[in-house]
Image (cartoon, rainbow, N blue to C red; front, side, top):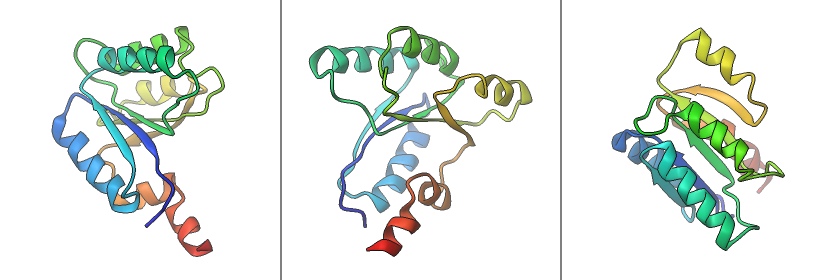
Length: 140
């Protein structure tokens, strides 16, 4: 539906959630480039490698789960900030998690790079809101 390609990074240890999110995003952005990582460590390694090889490259959107093995979402955020992966904050970073704990919502508000705290699963209406699909479709 939208012609502009998007680079999207999904960081979630649940393969099924990554698959569902991918399908919903591709419904609106057929030529999107979607990468999935099963934990924060894999994502940090990928982002650091991308930064070394293509310093100008950034993902347009990053969706991050909190509860993952190896490196959870909070540890990912700390490393992401420490390594200055996106110093100009070009990526739109969203927490996409099954957590509904008030402590997690409160903690998320302390990270200025987080755009929104979203409860899983990612669904069509939320994608339309995040990517401004309805607004973009109306202007075409």
